[in-house]
Length: 309
Image 1 (cartoon, rainbow, N blue to C red):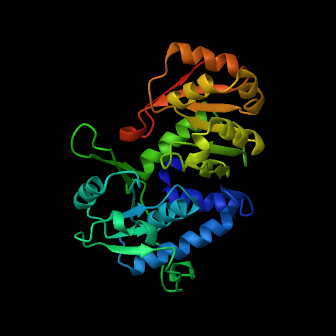
Image 2: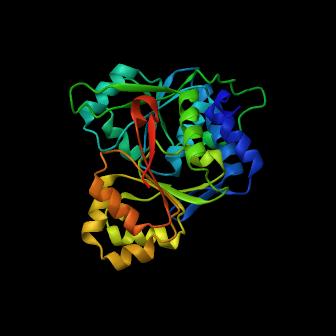
């Protein structure tokens, strides 16, 4: 059963099934499942040599990108705990998170090193300068067997209500949540999808070998460009917040919206409360799409799913 697997094992099985399928599209860059599997194996081996062991946090301080996903998957393959660090967070808040979680290493780029205080003694892997991590791991180095109960990631809240809170999720919790979503709305093999709630949404494509399109923030907040992105890339499924939907409806002509999103088949709405008014606007604009509202993403990954029709 899939919920008895780890996320790296689930990904590797998918890579064996669809090796030549595009896994990620990031602007002009793309990578297949097979190449992503090999590259993350290499980085995982490198991380092991740097001392990363089971259930040990490793920070990722990168922009929303293909590199971010490579780092995430490689950390978990090495047995470590993927810990995303938001670039937009104040340096003082990042320092509190690092002091609390005590990651053994941070994967980042030279551009972002100033975000981490020099007073914090943590090793850094600058993936834009260091290239050895791309080399195949030595033959005597084996990636660990990862139990479903092992910790997959730790994600911190912004601390808006006090001190930042670390939320821990196991491999089993994440996979169980994604299997539940798959039962409610089965995905098509190889279909193009885009999720705006990065990095929580990077796992779902691995369930069916889908292609994940990464949308730059400058496109997301230029609503007409965002709608063009959906249309031009033939996006089939999207996860989006109610406030972004409302902003698009308030600023873009209805005819443009209707023309650009007609190809959407599944829309997941999450992150905020969904009003009745917006619900009916969505039903009106997307008469044939599957509309689903879900919540509980942080503490329990996915708690409840509601079909909006």
